[in-house]
Each structure stands twice: as structure tokens, then as C-alpha cells.
Image (cartoon, rainbow, N blue to C red; front, side, top):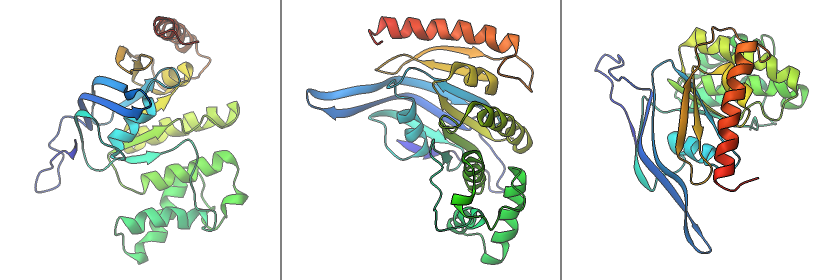
Length: 262
């Protein structure tokens, strides 16, 4: 069951968590009967915290993110979030017949923002993601990195307290991805959002997160967590990032070996 955590009458946050996942399991129908994908997941994301979910392909990372987003329901357990989460996918999912600005305005319209205020807010969000002046550009005029920036602005337009990101930079080249790591870190620090970020890239997880959560191979269970105490801003090639990444990679390899995946 997915629920929304309560707020006080004046709108102030009365919760201790941006998201709370309690004893969540998820099964899907298969040829031989139900297939258990997630098993007894317990995870809290604090307000303003950046958490990365890491694991081998097929371990249930994206499934868990979809459950938190409310796109599917757990087979067991409960999920509560502080307001409705915003979700950003690996693909930008922008509407090609709309301009960058109009893609963002669509999210504002769905939120009930008056028409007169939409353009100004869309322009503000484009400036936040460093795309000032791109309001009238069509999707085909934007590079891959620019499209993901617009997608990020559209997600931020939902005015959510928690941003869910499903490998949003996986399809980008290394240099563009590195730039967007910097941008995401800056936006997270400026806005105070909570972020739950799915990746299979260990160094990306360590570079971005305050906490890295490793899921075991299917069924996905929380195998281990790491608190990342490396000061921001971080570089992916920094020695402390590399050192922790090596430790996490060894643990990930062990999980893959234990579950017979190659």
C-alpha cells in the first residue's frame, strides 16, 4: 500500500521521512508461478537526503522505484512518501511536438498552476538547470544532455519533496554525464530535495550519494549500506571515491557470485 505522509494545517512538514518503505515485497506472475522480485525491503529516506540504489541488472531497483512512485503496488508491506514523488526516467520522455518550455509548462498545468504564471516558472526552472534562453527550442534541437536537463526541470516543476531518478544519465557520454553529476549535486543542494537515485554504476553512486544501498540479486534484498562521508563537491576520479567504489564493487561481485549470475 502506498500512502502520503501527513502535513500540518499550515502546510509545515510534520514527518521525519521523505519516504518510508516497510517490509515491502513484490512478486510478478511467471510461467512456473509467482516470481519474487523484491523481498522484505525496509528503507527510509530522510528529508533532504540523497540515497543511491545499487545492484546488478534484474535485482529489482527500478521495480522498487516504481513502487515508491505509485506506478505499481507492492505485494506486501507499505510505502509512505511526503507528498507525491516526481519521477525522472533514463529516457527523457519529452513530447517532441512541444518546445522545451512547453514540456515544463505541461507539468505545471497538471499541478493547477494558472496559465499566466506558467511561462515565468518554466523560465525560472530552465535557468536553474542552466538552460536559460532554451524555452522556445524544440526537442530535436537539443543535445542528449540538454534533453535530460529539460526532463529534470519538468520533474522539478511538479514541486515534489522527493525526486526519483531511474538511471537518468546511463545513455549519455562520459563527459556529459560528468557535467550533469555536477548539476544534479548543485540543484539538490540548492533545493533541499530528497533524491532516490537508481544506478548500476558504482562510481556514479559514490560520487552523488550521502548513502549507498546495495540490493542483492533476485530476489532483491538490502545486502548492505554505506554512509558516504566524502565532502562535496566530489569528482569521479577522486581517490576517496575510487577507494570506496572498489570496496562496494567487491561486495557487489560477491552478491552476484552468491546468486549464480555472471
